[in-house]
Length: 124
View 1 (cartoon, rainbow, N blue to C red):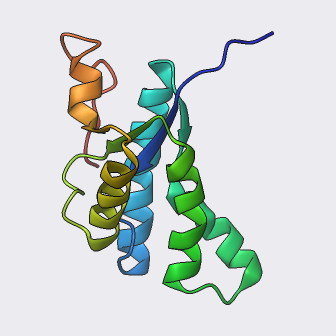
View 2 (cartoon, rainbow, N blue to C red; view 1 turned 90 degrees about the vertical axis):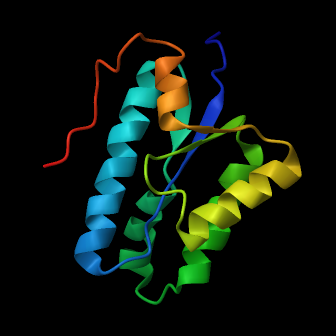
């Protein structure tokens, strides 16, 4: 039987113009890949965009409400660098605190494991 890994919810800014959304989702997924390599299962709420493409009529709250079920089950919320000021991320951090779920910033998780970040996020 495979050992269960802790679940990390990767929080970060998404709601932006179309190009900004894609760039923000790219940052979140790149962070999630690195966090997964540290031994976590990860959930990136921005991937719900695929459901929205199929449904065709999702509103912001449809995406946000769906992701909160995953946040409630998370063992940890990890915030993507520089994205903690977005309205949605603030709501996610607030809910995590209310539920007693630890909130850490990406650099805290990586620096606690490595002397340096071997998977450093580089801006294009």
